[in-house]
Amino acid sequence: MLKSLGARVALATALLPGLACTAEVGSGSGGPGGPNGIPDAPGVSGGGTSAVGPDGKPLGPPPPTVVRRLSRAEYNNTVRDLLNDATRPADSFLVDERKLGFDNIAEVQTASPVRAEQYMLASEKLVEQAVSSLVASLPCAATADAACAGQLIREFGQKAYRRPLSDVEVTRLLGVFQVGNDGGGFQRGIGLALRTMLISPSFLFRVELGEPVANTPGLLRPTSWEMASRLSYLILGTLPDAELFTAASQNALSSKEQVRAQAERLMGDARAKANITHLHSQWFDLASIDPVHIKKDAALFPKFSDELLFLARKETETFLNDLVWNSQEGAKALLTGSYSFVNAKLAAFYGVTGPSTENFERVALDPTRRSGILTQVGILARLAHAEQTSPTLRGKFVRERFLCTTIPPPPPTVNATLQPPQAASTTRARLAQHLVDPTCAGCHNLIDPIGLGFEHYDATGAWQEQEGGQAVDASGFVTGVTFDAPYDGTFNGVPALAVQLAESPEVQACITKQWFRFAYGREETPLDEAVLSQLQTGLEGSGGNLRELLLLLTQTDAFMYRGPQGETL
Image (cartoon, rainbow, N blue to C red; front, side):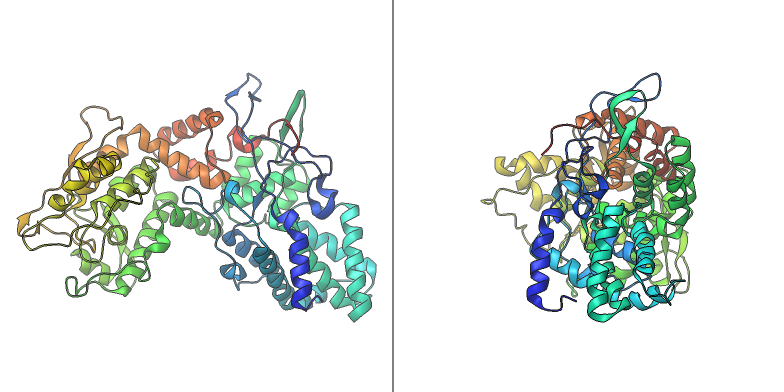
């Protein structure tokens, strides 16, 4: 059973060539029947197009699609649904590499001996817990022979690999079974075969080889099995359910209509809400709204507590979920909604009449003070220091999360420490040096004038009328953004800023990009211009309906097609 550490490390090292599959994948000659299910000769393929012909088929070269490794969240979800195991083993894995804030961008996913070792150790524990019940559920268990083992391998393998196993793969896995069977009996043999599948790249990676499109030489599209995985991981963050597998077996996932019908069905699954919560958590870094990342000066802010942070994170998660699943104009309300979801303690912090219990309820907020996610306690507290606000952090948040602008870190020679608060001073006055220092001004002119508009919110997110004995000046401006009349980018206070941002085409484009990146596991390229335009037009045409945006992501050429094979790597 490969119990020794040396055996584990040897197997982990043997896995590394497969686990490092971040190469672009084309049609390949090996197919699913190649070693470990990895194509023998991967090449370049695509996922989006720049134009669509009159027959509805894409024109032009699509951007590359790379093999995607299951993220930690996807791994946990997959073994939960495959093995009925809710232990979340991937929580102890190496942290996923991130790009653009997301943990599923294939371009930066890497492998290492440590990660391979973690996969193997997890497979041991998972199989140890599941093998008895799996064997007991076999109608042929009483025979305990190779034919019975083959039946389980095919059925379990189809779920684990998200496609039917080839005869070659079944033969190899039966060989693994036989080794265990000879050394310890039927259950041990089954356990060894299951562990082999759980450390196979065909389980750990989403490999798409595609199939030719009729009358269009060189163009590929995902097979129905591959489309089932695309749909399921996009919407549910886990492997396909029984109905999707049935549709795949019937080749009933080849048209946009078939795909949309399945997408609409999947959106009614509770797991869809959890997956979109994961999207939001990464987009807005909600995991950092906790006492580990946020510390406040207790003498200055005695009403603030660790408990409040946990409540604030739940508030934002509830608000965001409501925008997707219950709102018809979620993209707009994301910034301008003058309401939130609070319990008694949060209501008291906001100073509003609300629920009298620990249950969260929707409450109306003062629209002159609170406007969407930008004025929620958890976001504001995270984007501040222990003893004072941070217009720089708050402005940077707006630029990066809503305008998709990458702000570089300060030069290593720059002292980024802000002066401590003084009795008769304001943050605006202390920050002025950033805007005149030539080593700082380039970036700070982009972010500080936005963040200074947040000065009505102290370091905990509570409303303040004065700072340093002076009336708060919450005026600000946004540069480099298109605004239609009567807006020009100047504002006073976050509610006024939020209205202008909600109407900006750049903000709508950025919201679309954020969903695109999470959904497709890659950064957009110039070749995606038509797809992004299609998504943005659809979002605007729906009035900002985010649920419709999720459906639209399943209808683009980037989702429905793969490009021609390029040079092999």
